[in-house]
Image 1 (tube, rainbow, N blue to C red):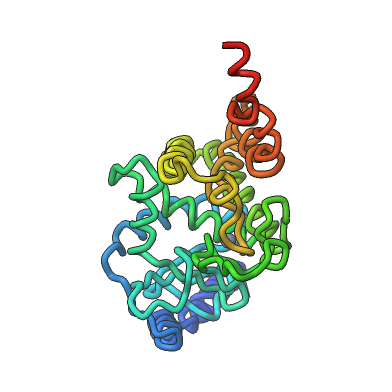
Image 2: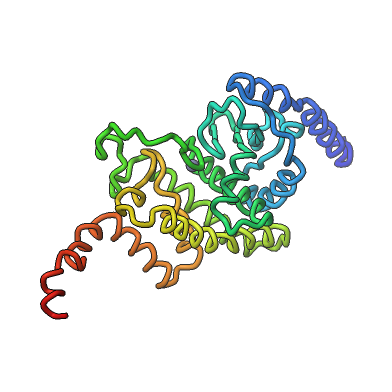
Length: 298
Ligand SMILES: [Zn+2]
């Protein structure tokens, strides 16, 4: 058998093998949505396809996998991760995004991601794409470390539990929180590596993520101050769930990791100081404690 025939046989065999890989994404998607009592969200499929093209161009080299929508998903191909956009009606998942690493599935709650974007960015509609990109990069981080997780936990804090018991004490860094911070850091690593890519699509998309992060930090800090004006700091600076650190702190860390400047470090230091020992030390300087001195000196 000459070389041409051998090459032709190899080509034929590989074609037959790839034909055998059946697209079964729609069936799997339907099954997962039914199990969780969720509905598919068709509203942003076009935008998701754009995002996935951009993300997969960095993802494939870092993780060796690509994220696809149901109509392109072959469950036999272990390099594919199925992305399922779902509606929030009959909500049984309390996050914007959720990764099931062993099943190779990411669930994506489109309408609540929209709400999150409106609340936590400077509010223009151009922020939705980079926010979705950032959340997907965070989920890729979960796949890189092989640990399931959510982008954020929306589970309300149980106020009957003691702080230590519910792991809400600011400095209490639970194992789950460490996983989330690792996934955040990996998301930023992907952004930093991606902007060096030769693929311009990758670069623009990731530059957009870089662009929105400072605005998100500013917005979160601003809202915290407005919404909690006059209340005790300890009420709003701690983490709001036992699995995820406070969103403002996470975004601040991501921002710092992206561009480590002394100003960004100072913002983090101030935040941590205020939510730990700051509340105690502040009393030493509070004018109402020293009012006798004030009165005498005026
Ligand atoms: Zn997560």
